[in-house]
Length: 171
Image (cartoon, rainbow, N blue to C red; front, side, top):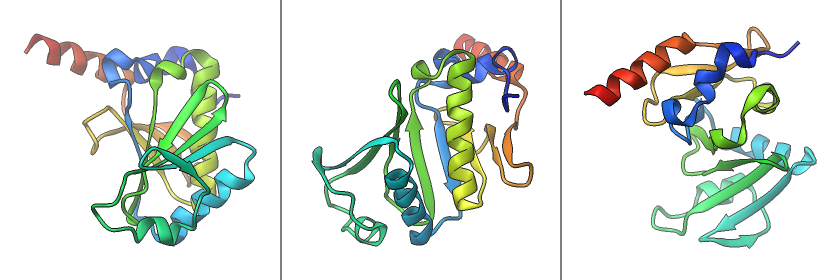
């Protein structure tokens, strides 16, 4: 059985309500956690590309990526857990792992299942919660992987997102 049923969570996957790129993160991380992510990406069979300043190259150790000077070129680790879904990690700080997923690519029950599987795989590897919040509303997660439950769970009422978005448009 899926972690989340599409009919229950469709608002959390609506780019007009959530923003196309919701905030997805793992807090309280370390360089070692980033290395676990890099190792997972290498070993998972997922397609991936490491870009530094837009130039593709080999994926270096996390300690090297995170030790780069603040004014260095930006780094993207682009991962495709399935061909139609792109996840972009941006390693900027050891203390937090954050990434983007485009909600336009994760529609219907199949899209919800792909996102849940990805969040659960990442959360299990790290032994930490992985949360998704409305774009720009970082502190209020709507769903995420709960390591205690060992599954993706709702952290907000899907109907409240619709009400918030509609209310925000009228302001």
